[in-house]
Image 1 (cartoon, rainbow, N blue to C red):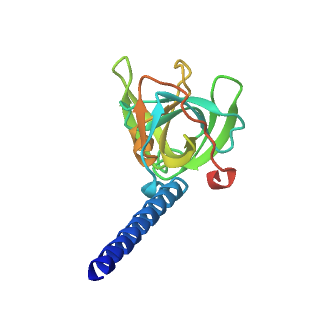
Image 2: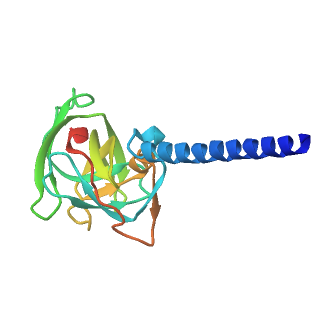
Length: 190
């Protein structure tokens, strides 16, 4: 009789352990799903292609962006309309027009975060203003520094650099393109 009681107790204990294990697995699955919609510090790294569709708040249509792990800072095509004078340019406002080369234009005004010097193809120093902007890539809003450049001669009006890739937890697979949609909520972008 004692041996039947022990085997029954073992069976009950085993069934309880199985139930606990299953509930832990399902709780882990729920928390993984939840992290996809939470802030970037809790997001999982997502693999994207070297070219993806992106959105800029205020620009009506989505744009094509090149994701470049060799670029330190994100860069967008911008025509400078108004900039501060030399004495106040470190913290002044700058007005610029974004143009993707396909009739997709928008005028922005942002405070200048800093200025950056970049070597051109010809070896000359180019001085560019840097502002903070949001972009939607792979369903994630990413806000980071963006330098304003003349990218008219380039294939892509937006080059997403390491700063936004790191902030958005995006890893680039150079063998694919257009792996995701820029499906970010409009409210979060403003």
